[in-house]
Amino acid sequence: MATISLQTPSLTHTLQTPHRYRTIFKASSPFNSTISTNLAPNPNNKNKNKNKNKLLGMGVGLLAAASMMFSSPFDANATRIEYYATVAEPSCELQFAPSGLGYCDVAVGFGEQAPYSTLINIHYTARFADGIVFDSSYKRARPLTMRIGVGKVIKGLDQGIYGGEGVPPMHVGGRRRLQIPPELAYGPEPAGCFSGDCNIPANATLLYDINFVNIYSGNRK
Image 1 (cartoon, rainbow, N blue to C red):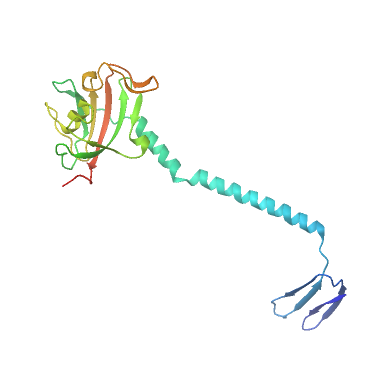
Image 2 (cartoon, helix red, strand yellow; image 1 turned 30 degrees about the horizontal axis):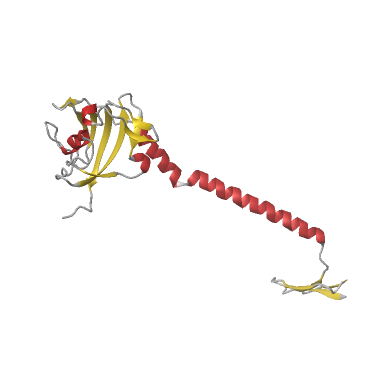
């Protein structure tokens, strides 16, 4: 048997307990009490502690999941990207070049125009004539890098961005709407085909909203 002694300025208590399990606690208090205990473990307490730990773990997991759900920046970005991909630029009155290309400027832009055969960065949303979106750089969360004026893209984009045949060139920061007839797009052949399914039907008129982001910084000087 062991002894539990509680010492205070005016009182001492002595208890007898089994001596098999001995734990000593030093209590920090104004009385500087020292407690020595020899207590056998209670098996019920172990089960209670396990249950408490399980509940605590579940609670922490739920809080972490909720935090990710409501505060993740990717959710906000996805919403913003989807917005740009499905909402058109403000309307403007189209003008038509002799080639049949329709164009109008939503914003003229503030920077330089792209030199011939230069890599540029643009954001775009592409639609069919009925307004259905079939492609968008916003959905990929990065602009498209393209070489301008040398036939690397459909003729309607080259002419609509670089200019020519009565169409003024775009400037960095500019936003332009293009209506591209089939002969300046993909013509009588369907395009974007994979395993027999084609994204763009034959003889499709295409609508593009173009945002001239900047001139690509990796161009050779």
